[in-house]
Image 1 (cartoon, rainbow, N blue to C red):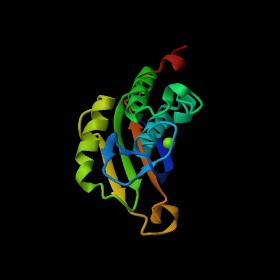
Image 2: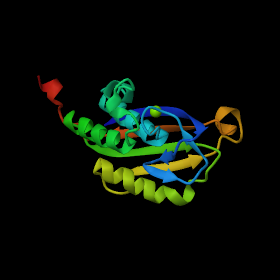
Image 3: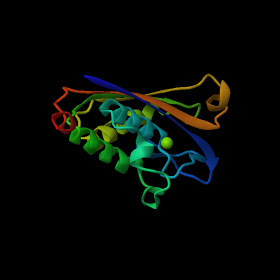
Image 4: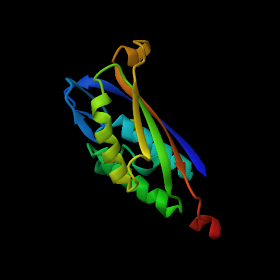
Length: 165
Ligand code: MG
């Protein structure tokens, strides 16, 4: 079994859509980034890539590449799923915690989980999403940004092409 961890943070500003877990939320501020800045999905991508031992989201989808400008992070996640499978792994499960003061995510979480598991081609229940506030402490607590942390587990571990060579 392999484990990976992912962490990401993006700033909240006016004039951007707020996209989390592939869903557009009704909120006056949005996250800044080269892609759609979906911090939840980025942390999940990094956890999966880390577990597979193939680097991170910046290595596979550089923010200097115009191809990824404003791209939906679900497109990146789908590609991450392909990369992980190509390395000879299967996704066991992933767990993501989003750290934000506002908006409340609880009602939207089942749909986010459904969307993310569909994109990764895994059974519902293998991708878990949680949200917590930062108790008004620090930058996240002041609502200056949104952070997310994720862990992923891959297995059973097939012998990868690289190891065979
Ligand atoms: Mg990011």
